[in-house]
Image (cartoon, rainbow, N blue to C red; front, side):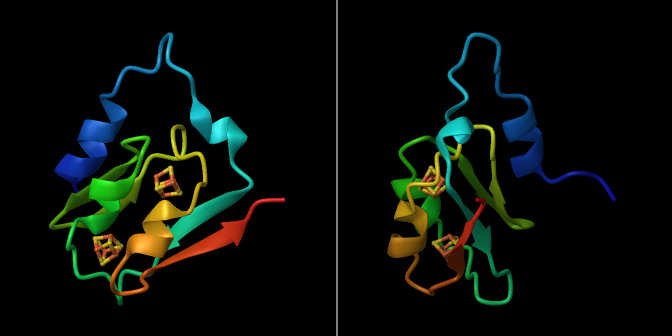
Length: 86
Ligand code: SF4
Ligand code: SF4
């Protein structure tokens, strides 16, 4: 199966010289695809542009996701859960 456009876009993002804010994270957002309606609200609110939404689903770039939880709070369908990494 080929990768989605969202995944390709995230993987193409340059990381050389970038601050990988994923290292700050204590919790990670996990998307429940069965609840997700692909509305794009998480993409809109993410302060680190770490979310991509495509027809294939939601992809979170954990190199840049700092675990702030805004996406989980703003998701109108409660499809995102913050899970401890510690
Ligand atoms: S805000 Fe929630 S329902 Fe909307 S795309 Fe993101 S995870 Fe899916
Ligand atoms: S937890 Fe914060 S940084 Fe990570 S994807 Fe959600 S809104 Fe973006």
